[in-house]
Length: 289
Image (cartoon, rainbow, N blue to C red; front, side, top):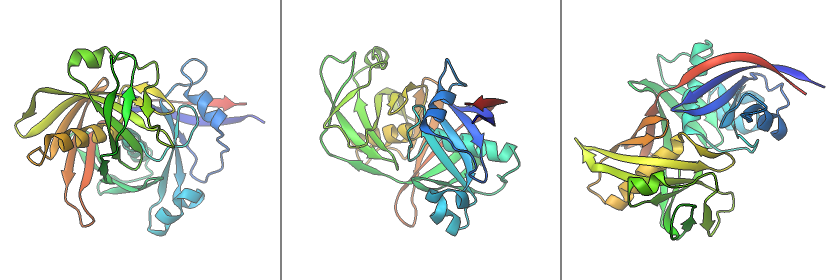
């Protein structure tokens, strides 16, 4: 049986999404449906899909609903697989809710995700999301990628979803990577990981703000123009390498634009916040077989 669904196409610094409103959880969105919708030749095209569903209508939203949160971001990778979080996706999600009149942004907006409840506010760059507590681990991992002459050490970072950050020696090395081929991690994380490759800008710190460039390979997607949690992970990793004198504010350039990262103290520990734009491009309808 076919079903016709309304959709919105949106992006955050080029990290693009198909947004499907399904408030009551009535749609049967299989992995194949998501993969077709996100296919850039045979579907709408996107790095992932954001399903807008009430917390009370999805099993993963039970805890968020109990704390008074109305909306859940059901995020899927472009291949249809389920993902815990998407930093750029949260901003596009908030933009959609605000433009559709489903949420007011004159006060902080709380949304449910598989990585817990996230809070968004308006910011000079567009929207800022509190990604919550973070963790940088010193577990050994080697990363092989096409374009690198030898394997490089990677830094584990957990932003609610897994990341491995790799430092490169120059902008030329960053630009020379071929990320049409997935990087290989040794040992391989059980659920995979997003892999970020970073280089410092010159100077690394300008007027108290750290500055880096980054490219990313997202699990289940491939190289994307941006990755919000990856941007945060890259900033945290470079800050970790730089030592205790490193700044709390970072500016990260990705192929799709520039995003801001800052660390703030919180009652339960340090939180990392991500800020950047969110754009809704067009709307339409599509029939799924």
